[in-house]
Image (tube, rainbow, N blue to C red; front, side, top):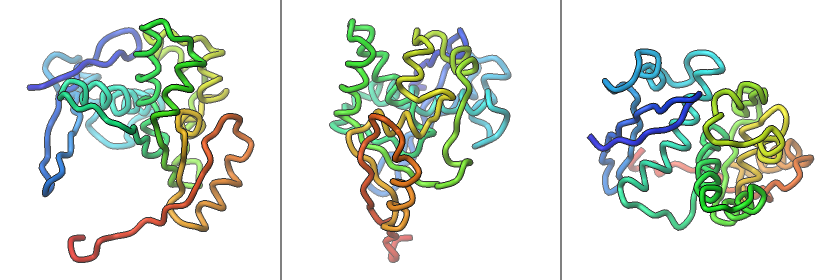
Length: 208
């Protein structure tokens, strides 16, 4: 197995990689059901959107931080990082941590990550724009070393995954022209947010 580890609530969780070949595209899947993990950690990736608020943050850490580590382990070096919905915002946080390890201040790291990232927002309802209170975020991501002030700078207080995604990108997009109007109205009060354009979703009918 090719595997990576992510820090969750003071300990390391092993995540192994599966590759699904879809035509010419490799889809990499992350799975915590590994013998090295505790029963609770093995269950993190068992059910999408399952469990309580703690489970959701665990899944988001595996997706975002684990995704960055997985690509690095496979020797893949993206020229642009794409955060697809706020659920993947820990991708940018992992990139910020890598810069922090090299002595880069948090505010500068945020700017650097934004320069190399884009963000897609989908759902204009609460279920698609998760928020976490700062004490929970601090407990689940204590290993990362962010202060409450730094977490607030990234995602606000309470910590919004969508706000974090908008601040960690140079450009954002909605998924239809009307949705673009809605998204710009929803997030117009976010300081440092990427501008939101519209890219209409489409389906390639012959292969769908």
